[in-house]
Image (cartoon, rainbow, N blue to C red; front, side):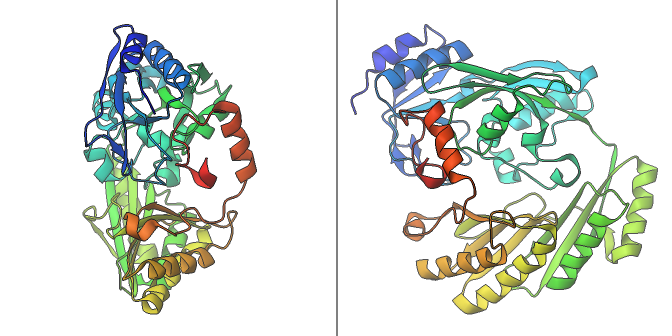
Length: 414
């Protein structure tokens, strides 16, 4: 595909730059031809209008911490580097609301709102956070973490978004106050779409006050007992901020870690009550907290609250069946990550099949491969059973009829 870089650069009207791609400018192994970094929403709109007019395929990139997640795009002509859109637009501390551009690093946003004793409860994996994961990247991959148990996932904290479509249309939904939820669905369909529907350029979020004290209660137990203990804490009146389970590869046991947040006096009392309820001890944050498990392949496994025990059991039995290592870690609410290491592609496929059998339908759970080496990913069913695929394809057709945004990167070739 021929690219007119001069015209692309001219479309920015001085608000950004366009350059030829370098060897490192790839998206999951697919090499780009050019990289653009607009510095305003208007420039982003003009750039996409010109790129689509040239018939180019554009892929948005923030810090690149999840560019290997999902499936490689069919091709990449232009990488749109969102880090030129890095302003904190507005912080209404009194209303617990922040508006920021998509290229702003989450850790920088947290530092800014933290000065007012507030936080965005966006517990993205620590590896990504430390590497500069951006607001747009976290939304595009539907990042989530331990504290979604009490304060929901990142997508639920979005009050409004501004998105640029492939033809340059700037679409805005929602608002910046909690009571205004008009157009909120646009934010939801963009979240987790891997940049295949539009480029998120700005978002407004609901913040929470930072709670002054926290305690961790840790208990290690056999797999079925650990799952039951975790359910017991979730169903209790202890109001945990998070209940996480860590099952190391090859182990017949799992550790349950309960996070309690609040005032010092209340947290201390609730921690003692938690120990009385499930045993264990009050301790330091575990080293694995909010980190992805290691392995050649990383997958995201979801289940119902009662289905977590089945996933833990499936991981253990699958190891024995396929000669694999399967670490499992995540929320007792039923959102976990698996780290797989297996001797051959058919063993990886076998482990995925076992885990999917424990989460037997999109209604009851799913298992999706996030990352895998090319030699293991080829031939794998990365997405597994997916509900509403026809509806998703219809949305893609409506918002990006020319398939100019990261085609093939999302489920069903979207």
